[in-house]
Image (cartoon, rainbow, N blue to C red; front, side, top):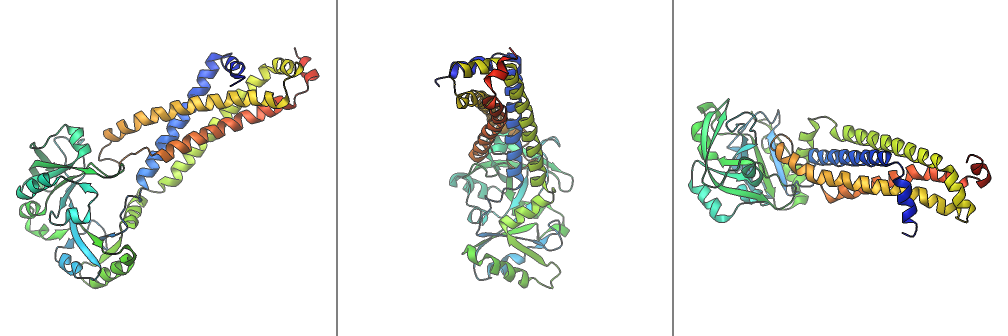
Length: 379
């Protein structure tokens, strides 16, 4: 702080260059935060419960499983509760208004997925309403719906349907999916063609002890081995990871892009600081001549670089804090929930400081080693 005026005076010597360099940092940190958010969204398995298993058809999740498997699964030792889901795939008014809709088993949904909370009075109203629906808070906000609204949903396979919104669910954790639309299995079962009746998309199983999950998964698959509809049972986290792999190696792609962004930023900032030091060779020599040590000269250059990094980094991360929630709402249902975690913010800020330090250290090292006599000859 003692020499802050000198550092600020040098920074504002070239105002346009200063703004462009800070802007480069801001853009780079914004891209870093956004890429980190997307990476987390597509590789998020931390929200998966350790005591849940997912059962799908061994051939493909597209192929259904008989409803009769439910009771057989319940009888396997270690199974606490079983619920089932079907994908509905409808749209609201326009095809752009997509959000995930699931046919659920109302009897066991809350037992198996307790982290998605519905008030008891709303849930009871839902149970009494054959055409009722429970909607995630983000989807309610997106379409400005309210409890009591009657919502039309149209599909290419099942035709047009209408539902009454009886309740809203909220997630306990920031990353929980609040975009889903649930309605009752009985209503779905009575309206679909005969060939689709009694067919389940997948089962979700809650086990008594997470340590027994591998054993129970094997027991479930063994129960239905050599049947017309063999099963594939795995932990919820493994199921989520397998689903993400269908999009390709997103993690590698995002890490590569992030590395290129920061490397480019390092070159831009390092070049800016090198030019700045070269322009002030005479001034730095004068500072040394009047008694400033080599370390203080290095500190001046590093101080300038770090100020640029801090200001640009905070601007970029602040922009990400504002933009990510807006983007997440705009892309509701199209991509997983976008959530900017404190870890991404901290890592981004540390990375900005690192780039600022490296880009200022090399030019500063040259200024520190500069001989006064040789430098004054250029004046």
